[in-house]
Image 1 (cartoon, rainbow, N blue to C red):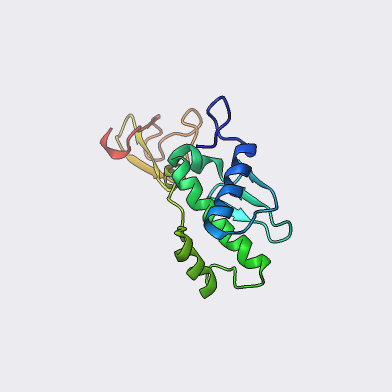
Image 2: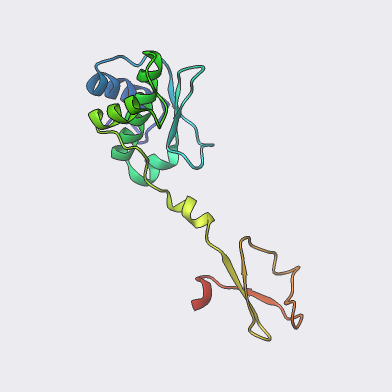
Length: 162
């Protein structure tokens, strides 16, 4: 594992890992920058066409570890090497799909549970009439009341079961 003394992956160790994976899996050097971008939300990583840099979502490393990280790196390196050699680097291109298969890179990264959590609804129950409200977003229960009886609302922790 390529981690610094404190046991946490950082941009320097990510750069080393990307360079190592590039040589071992593609027999080509990675000559640009690789770094973590903590602002990425729904993707494991991305290859930047203009700068040729690779950005990786740190949340995937935290959630799944180095094995998933290496899969993301291989995927982005497929874009990188194909683009620099003038071949089809896009997801739908046959050359891209063939290279993914050849190096054992995943077509898609695993799903983060935090992304899945965003799609879940929030439930409230009126303390007086027990009416159940389902909302996509949380509301401030100190400001909002039941629309039927004007009673106060209770946020349910685990959906309807609470």
